[in-house]
Image 1 (spheres, rainbow, N blue to C red):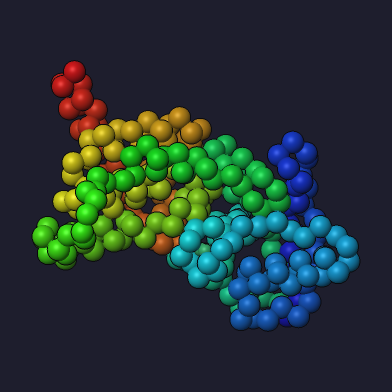
Image 2 (image 1 turned 120 degrees about the vertical axis):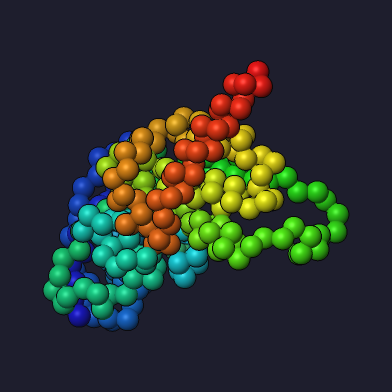
Length: 251
Ligand code: FES
């Protein structure tokens, strides 16, 4: 089938960007969105034009590298689907797709569809870890974890850090991302020793990174390709408040 792709082209953050229309013939319905861009890029390279820059790595919905807006929706129209998994059969022959990068103050543009998401790394560095002793691997049963607890932790740990939550949120908030990273450790017994510091430090870092505030709109969870639930934001707020309160009483 034939599709028209209206793609945001911008050489770097200092130059002005603009949409450019491209027609892609012979799009296989079973191709992914990224493969469709590959086909377009091959044509552009043959014509001596600059290919469209976009992030990708695993192409299996695991790594979180890929992501852009399609017709105003983060990762496109299919629920729980990254653009690397999004099959072109979900679009109609002749349809026009408007493709643009994540738009968020905390994600400055690098080129075309690529944005700098190192603000997420800074949030993780602020506390997204647990203490581990070196030496032999401990017995897996040394600390018992109930199935319901393990399941809730795994649900939060499914976050791939793609940034769709930030791009979908009208406030540009990273509360769903930060909440997922706080919750998946804080739910487990192994995550308790640093729980107070983690909640406080990661929220402070998130606020330092130019993300907006959460006002419980819920677009983040609707756009999330891993269906991270809003409850992680409640847990983030709990850990931030209790951590801040205990620090205040200790000092
Ligand atoms: S390329 Fe890894 S999630 Fe899409």
